[in-house]
Image (cartoon, rainbow, N blue to C red):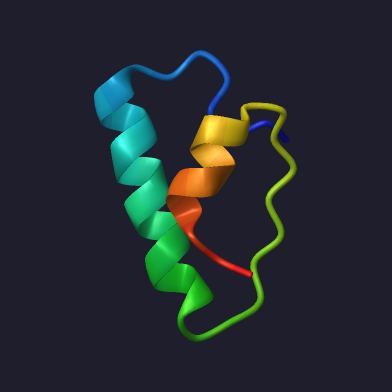
Length: 44
């Protein structure tokens, strides 16, 4: 799955927020080629 593929900037921001919140309480794996999207998640 490529979560950012074909999304508008608003959708990308919303998805980033969702992933960041999910990562606070569980492990999240994101496979994405858009490195700017990955950097915005700010997870290790």
